[in-house]
Length: 143
Image (cartoon, rainbow, N blue to C red):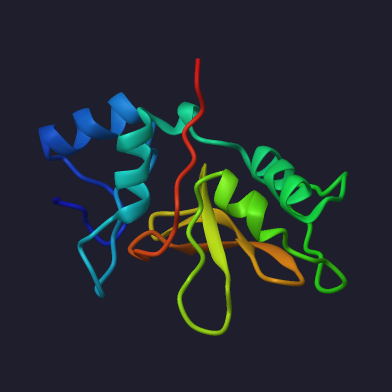
């Protein structure tokens, strides 16, 4: 709520929220005050209850019927997304022609972004996205 341009805060509520959920940086953006990634972290119960990049890559392996995708590895062509598996896992494809979606990891990149994996019909990539992006989907890990 009270983040400065360095991604820091002295606000007691912000500090308590960040400590409780394992968030390192307060989000600062001149564009938006909505931190959807932090919302996903809160919903899951902390960054330790969200997948690592390697775990999100395992979701890619399952959806595309492949194996060995690394957490920070892009596969830029030749894949076939199994939309039945996407639905089985509870993900929602974007409307329109792209039939894609992305999944947040619990890995913070900076005060402005966090890592995610994008799933397209024929490829999958990792990147860091603005934490104020509202279209990311979350996976929460069980006990």
